[in-house]
Length: 507
Image (cartoon, rainbow, N blue to C red; front, side, top):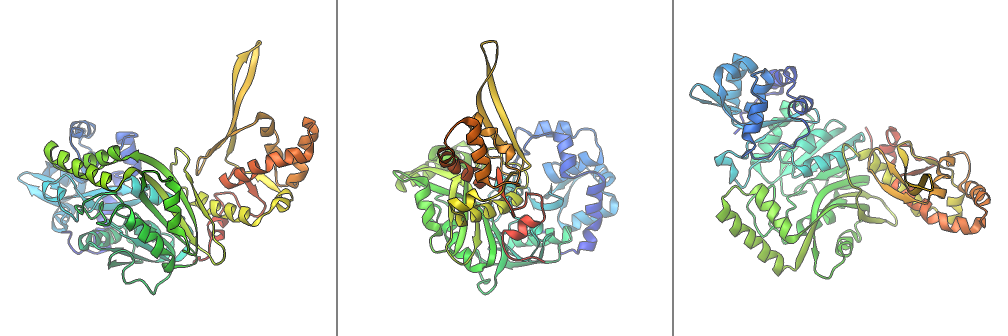
């Protein structure tokens, strides 16, 4: 395991990585827009070729990302003799004759440097408590999380500690739990590596001994795989189907302050003859929280089992075939036809609560926490605003709205055939729109009530105002819900007021 070491002792390692540009930017420039595999196989030759020049960055990538041996002289050139020896004492490197090899993976991510297992090492590949690095769900939760200043944050199932370390930048105090002692050792080491002293790590299952504490923000990237096994702690909850995720949803509200947020990545099952939203909706009944669920993907059961076996099981074809067969037999017994993947945001709030379950937009990329916060404000507005109040509202286009028109050549000129609006930042919603109505959107500049704008449009189109108003109000409500239109008093994303307005708390 990693040796006990202080943040000050680790400072030279951070500095060497910074100077060599062993950062997300540096890796992007080296590899381009490719997804680095969690386990190297056939790709090894490609990545070795890209790191062939022998620069300090090449050597660090080979040692700490690819996990391949490099000549000791090259390692000393990149790290320096003193740091090379220290990395050996700390458990980061091992001597292999005249070469040196990485024992752990160091991953640059969002300004952090994270130690995780080299999952392809034979002694690690089958460990139930292997500590994973940055997966797709890790990144999805990190980007989905609200980044407002808070007093108290919680990371449940912290793993290598990444969500806790990110929260520590905007929370006064962070608690992080995990049932795995080994994961907590990595997480504590990473907290020191990144100089995050405001995190308390606790060995516990889920919320564990925190029943008397309340948080402004709680996040969890749980072992959500719908699996018949208990082989890997990071993947398998050991509970039937999606019941562990349901348990987290039911227990989380009691750990939140008024206005506090709970955010989670998850998979949930779709059973034969059941609408995918029905079973999920029951999770939130009586929680005392407003909830927003975004479905990002859906896999048929057979494809779902195939991907998990392919990506996480280290055995050969015979073992993979046996595990796949067990997975599919389990799905058949449970009548599971498909599994959906998504994100949940819940906000504790007294009074009548709302629930929003929908297909998420395609192509979510980068941090969207500000848009999640704004989405809660917009839903609040719609819940509290009747028809007359909406007609009196002063609405404005969000700054990230764009209108696109598709045309075809007819009768010697371009004729519009479709018009759509989309958001260029945040949650990239897209909506189809009647071309005539699209013309009125720029008139919504926050200066006049909606009714006045619609009456003027009706006069221009030669239609009855009340008829046009009746047709437009559902469309306007939907555009507010998606964030195309913003009511007076709701700031645009990017404003510092968005996060704090969506809930209580703040440093």
